[in-house]
Length: 308
Picture 1 (cartoon, helix red, strand yellow):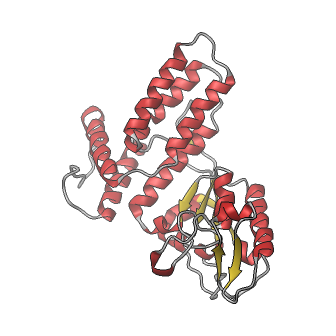
Picture 2 (cartoon, rainbow, N blue to C red):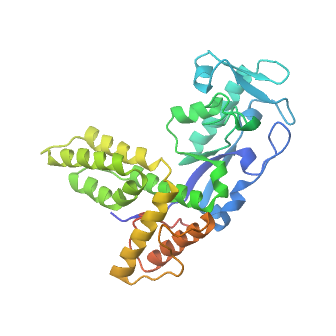
Picture 3 (cartoon, helix red, strand yellow):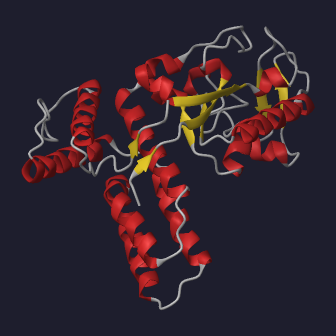
């Protein structure tokens, strides 16, 4: 079982974050430009529920009233525009049209615009950074379908993007593995356990105990295999804390240096103060040298080499 993902990942994205000028005020920004060369390593599917609702540009801004996005789909909340008109039915149509597009594109993840009453997940208002009524209408559909979600804000942070990318690659790799035996389950665990501990040590310890109890059984059915697999995927969705990233970067780099002779300049111990960009450069530097030497880098366990 090779720790390699060769196919290009397919990512959906809020169209206004992909450069399309589709916001209510006719604005848009291409945050994928922040990714540099990484931008070309993915297949992109931009969508906009508000445009697909037929409201056009420019348009009166909208807001959720009476509840959150889940309440909206239960008929307990509505979408109103700034003029007080009920836009619930057209927004439903637009959200469903976008979801159908993403399903046809067979996306692996979705990058959403936080603060939007349609696409927002943890915030549906941009006014004074208030939460509003999260999730938004489209955000609720995405959460309900358990899609791997990334905030577009994190595309502007090199270290946050590195964390998202390494976890998404591992997530898709695990998802596509056929677990049909104890050996295949153990092989997957051995490849991703280090990053799981880095993400959530307490939860991973619990998972390890559960995992070993399953391995003790004489016979394991597919249901149990898939439950463990889902546990792996759940942990990989959650962002790492910066302090943990620094701690394990140093630990895993020293391991590579002592055992394999890998040397990368300007990799610092966790307590050394430096900015986020420098930490991202350290991570990418160690990752690059490990890949060049065909070595296993525990912080980023799955090598992503998409076919051109």
